[in-house]
Length: 191
Length: 191
DNA sequence: AGCGGATGTTTCACTAGTAAAATAACCATC
DNA sequence: GATGGTTATTTTACTAGTGAAACATCCGCT
Image (tube, rainbow over all chains, first blue to last red; front, side):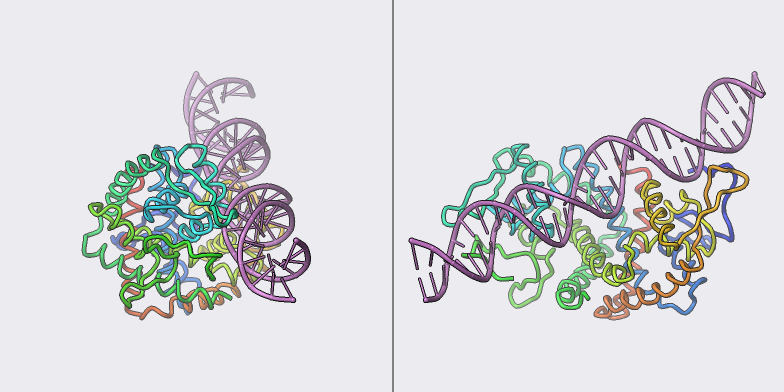
């Protein structure tokens, strides 16, 4: 990334990205935290260290993991839907699928429509309650996702390969702890 | 969440959410991992344990942290933009602001337009290069964000309060490690 | 049998984002 | 001082999501 016509830097501000401070490499959030401490020396910034990094990691990983899916012709949301159907190993109703993939009903309707058109998902109406639909992978859908999943898993593992296995397990554990807490808390404490 | 007309559960499938297995509470991703292991016993699922939880935590936190911002009348993206201007303590060009907030130029244009209309951000044209704009907080914008930030920080800290301080620091450290790796890697390895 | 409230799914109107084209200004070189 | 290539920003056309309303059906009750 080359600088513009003349350098706009003012007062030690550096562009976002990887940066160094005293020879030590810092991530983008660490840089932001340093700036915050100068402007608000008394603020408690611990939450940013976690939440900021979490958001940033999620965004980067999302972008990265979209690449192989894009080549297969689906987006992450559609992949997640197909995975949910594979995982449970049977049929799911749209509502259940929405809960399973943490999406809105409207989003599921749209995704299922496209996946049906692609011939990867099929629908059947419940005999007892004609409101409810049962969705499942078609044979082609099953083949498609069974081929895609290992590829995707390998790719995602490779993305994390720079992290020592012990550190990765540690991280998974801590994230599980946090997630469990958030899932419990955010029912009642959202206001 | 009450069940529908009749229980659709098939083969031990449980609705997404907090769940138990042998008296032990599991997060939603742990449940999904158990399902995966039944369908693909040989797959290496470590990446899901990290990436899945990361995405889910980010989504839940995003939803939760939007609440106080919504009350103040801005969304997270606009808040981030205001914060970037506060953090650097001076002016920023749109391009720089885009890099600083990890957004596209087009997104910044839209957000700045709204924040200008709200009277929180002002713009001045560079004298040397009339292509570039310099954006800064207005007095009102500065007051607004200086009042909002501590409130938001307190709220975010409260969200993480269930995590022991040591665990939170550990998590921040590990996420920093991961983020640094991703920032370094994703320049060259995205294909 | 039929009314009223509840539930599962889809549609609708709208929002917020993106990539790529368009616009505007700059600079080096001829 | 015109030209061509480059950079900063905005506009445009489009996509994917959302919440709320609409629709379709169910069940309990009288």
